[in-house]
Length: 239
Image (cartoon, rainbow, N blue to C red; front, side):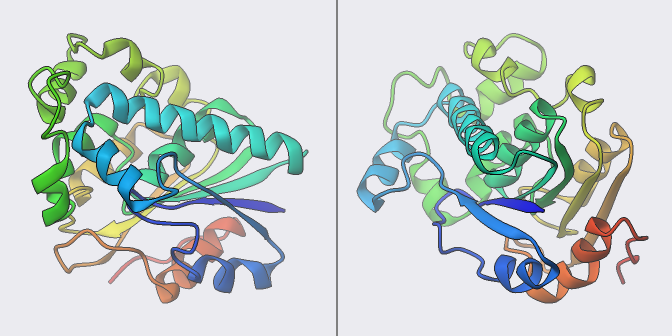
């Protein structure tokens, strides 16, 4: 079976080699999906400096379509999607669009785009210093527009609705969902992950760390929780 992995914001195609180390021995063919604007550091920094909430939603939409286009070419049958942080939202949107996705795994990702956008500056010092600072098109900033989108009043509502993961009919298309994270992750905290999972059938949430930061999910946690999930076994409880 094929597995598609999407890295997070600021990552690269070389991020998290643990993905191949854990899943390739199980027989999965792993393909990595690059995020737009990540081909050079200068291009990424320029994009971040002028980022709007609408741009963020379009970014997710474009990458999800890239994943689906790739899967249509090389995975004619069922496949798995795994995404880290922003890559988790991309994987989730793809899973909501394609019924061939048998399992969706979110790493350090809550599933709620608006909530994550309102917390975006907590990802890192660079994000807090840079994201959306140098544009007049932001209409009050990413956090404000994300908050307004929850009530259908964002200036970028059309862009958001294309990737709104909370729409009931889209949630209903998810077959199996696993969320792995840190209990006190400032961007994807436990409560938000649990709330999204409660809306989703056949979902499992495991907060496998308690370090209070936004960070990748390591090899041991992937083996302990993601592997049985993909094999349709019971997922162990976290300590």
